[in-house]
Image (cartoon, rainbow, N blue to C red; front, side):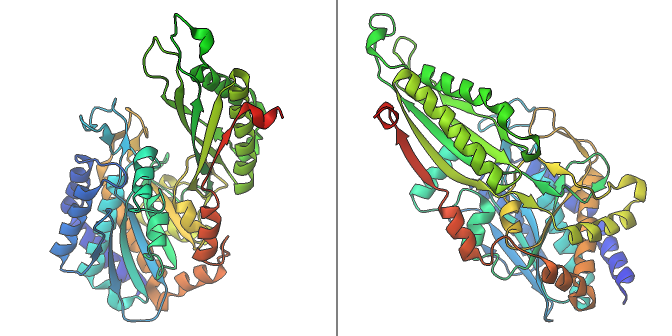
Length: 446
């Protein structure tokens, strides 16, 4: 059987399962859960694996599953990924009334396409014509939200890292993986090879510490932490023009606590923010400037400021050779006019695919069929393209990579130059990003 015949068999199997694949996508959409809480979603994936009659590993302390198809022939380990989590957007009409969670980023389609690809590989017996191992990994906590909750998990030693892929990398789930592929909803056309690069980020938690006093009777006795925070935020806004456009810096803080009661001078004010940028160097430089601005707000009011840095995600690099091969498959599945070209497109969002890209070739391809994103306007407009064409892309790309003794996958892995030589080197750098320090007026005026 040649490659074209194999891909046709995969496509026929997907068509036969199309209703089942789409229904799984809809069920997950109707049951959104945020990061490290996706146990119901993980159990849906487990049920599908059981129906397929395959062995799989499932974590107990956090959500996460891994199923492997071993072809029995030497070759790279290819991971087909899907993300389990949703975001929080209470304004969305389909958000969970209690938690505010909603799949307004298309992760439900990722899981459906990942399971659909596994179905197609098994139903078609495609593994008999491929080499290497195919790993299907359902990953928790891609969206970097609910930081306080995740830091509590870290404090209790349930997790070490706040992002799902770094956590699974730490747990050894990617030790036998050489390259990764996944889809993401979005794009202006039916399919796209995805961004060339995407922003990475550092995550910050800031606490301004003042002195409580009666807001009406003795404000002169207090130190207003909210005013200090406001000056710090204004200082950040005042340095935005110093960020170079080519670095794609994004700083977007929110106040998570502004005080306790209105008639007491606020003494404890909390802020969270990301510092995003195209390169590690740009992020670190912007982070220093933001720290300086935050400290300035504290000094102006005589307050203290506690600044905590938490590793976010590395800048993401989609492997060019994977993009070229994916685009070839996209054109075969659709046509030239409905597939975006490969370009030097940069995305200003962040993903933990970036962390994997520091160690191995990765691809996050885009599949159309939605409008909006991370907002109340998010809507699935073409479920067939999103669920079924996304599945067909992953299945056919898997065949392309692992057919003919996995020649194409081997070449891509061989030509890739990782940022880090090992995961140990990667974790050494990441662990150095955890830091907390307190600045007082006396630290500056000595």
